[in-house]
Image 1 (cartoon, rainbow, N blue to C red):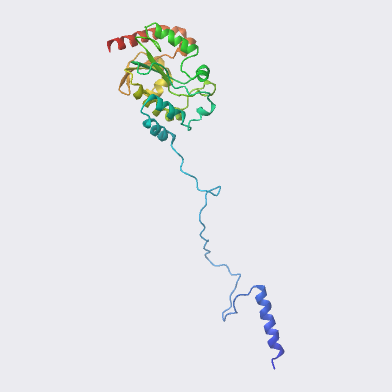
Image 2 (cartoon, rainbow, N blue to C red):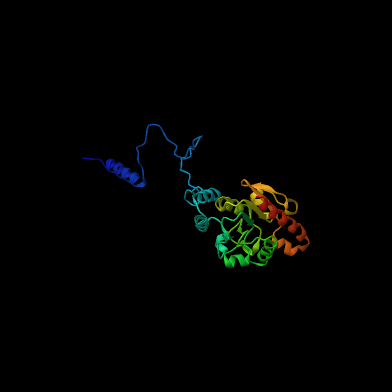
Length: 256
């Protein structure tokens, strides 16, 4: 016959199991509250903030270079620029301002960026500055669609900066590959750099009052920096220098 102590011990063991005991008492006492000298931290996989692994950021300049290289005609280049979504200027502009004048002309003018009128019409130099430019070119028997001496016109940036602010360096950097390809496809014999930002982009220099009238080289072509007509509207006292530059341009074209 089993003793009462057996039932007591058995009931005590069941009670301990219910409390969570998982092993029997060993011969050596164990202090469960004792803190080891060195506590190893559990290895946990590092997770970036937000709980996701960020993707590598695309380089807009590299993407622009790739897109520009794929264009083999001016029409394809225009389409490539229209599809380029990495320049924020595009979001606030009405139209892509690609070019005006006669493709294949001996003279190609590179302006800065569209203004309000250009953004509305989708053509470069159509506002007051453009009207003055047309008069300047007509004075040396040239023009956008001149029968004997046409010119071709584009800008550094194809979209209007907000409030006509100056272009930002990263905007110029990502659109420059398109401009260089534009020059290659248009294949002019002479370039005219109209204003400071055109010089900054293609020459890496600013200071139009110092640069103007001095022939240089851009993309293997003779290039002439000139005052922007908008500057001449604000400072008409420099029209004498602008006239000298126009005569220099005419002579360069005539001499071939």
